[in-house]
Image 1 (cartoon, one colour):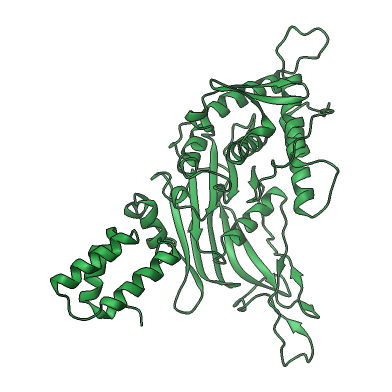
Image 2 (cartoon, one colour; image 1 turned 90 degrees about the vertical axis):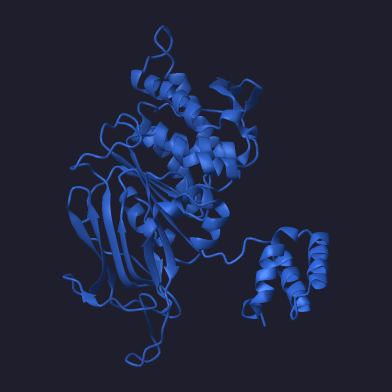
Length: 430
């Protein structure tokens, strides 16, 4: 399957999601692209909430917190499932429907919330999805796990019979950190242990003292291919090897242990390893949820990351939540939804057209992410101060002085804009 090839009609995965009148949402309607769907918008527009609904299929269950409201009907009690009430009653007593999730198999499930949640000040509740289907996939949270101080590998898991066991050893540690518990190991150490186990037990035939595992051998070989696809060309990566007690990256510019890799390189390796482990050996389509994949990445890596992952994993359906304009515009072969508040202060969704996908980072920040200015706040303040000082008659002498003053503080490129604003006083801030 090529990077742009469509899924088969009966493939597993997500097809559509609709939410209405729940939490901050007004009416949300999403149709997931077979390869890449991007969700973007300001903070608190519900991107992580949407991923949280989908992540339940991959055993990431995160309860929702109420927004307590004291009601007159039950004096002294706090009852709420969000800022607004669901309008449709569920077939399950005590529950109300707030949405519907449809799968690529054409099956669907209602999404329901409890009618009442009672607590002293706040409480949590879970969703009810009575017809939830099985979906093969993985959820990668916004908190990259593989970072921290150096820890040499003292032991490796011997139960490395398949990729699922290696995946579980890593994600269980990540879940423990996510849940606020401590196992005595860092996720970075567990990442290295799983990579080293794959290298040891994936050694080719001919080692009489070690049982040959062809499945893990294929996994280890494929990992090298994936890394050559997703790591930046500037790194000039050659291969990843084990030099006890370390995992080492060999590059044309020198070798270095994995712990010394930059946060961006470690982030890419961690995401690629998890996706490969979870999808290895699967001929069916596979779904990966990525929450803020741009974390720790240089802008150039943000720009290249999704196209390279689409090439490395052609069978994967990616659903991504991001704030990065470089991720939003990464590829035209995608569906991008911007989440934003309407005039009723409810979050709604709108799909971006090709002109917005081809926009520059600055245009995307303004037109898609709603940032009214990309200038530093001090520069914006200085600009407004200068405009206020030169408001009034626009003589050639005053324009010359305006240009000179803007040049002195590094704002000369904004001179044409300043002239237009001065010609239209209604543009000036009061």
